[in-house]
Length: 80
Image (cartoon, rainbow, N blue to C red; front, side, top):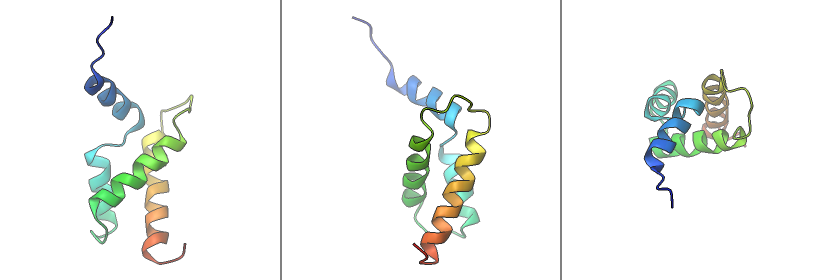
């Protein structure tokens, strides 16, 4: 039986997709701290899951950043 270190797998996934504390803090700051970081993190992970089968990941962090920022801005403005 092979032992799998999931912390390493998660770290590799974060490196590929780019959702980490730094990204969450960047978005949170851009939104003026008006939302809880937990909400920013949740939306970032949601967006990340939408791209889980992406074959090209070179710009995925930038794309996730933009989409999360757009969704949360709409949410804050009550435009949902």
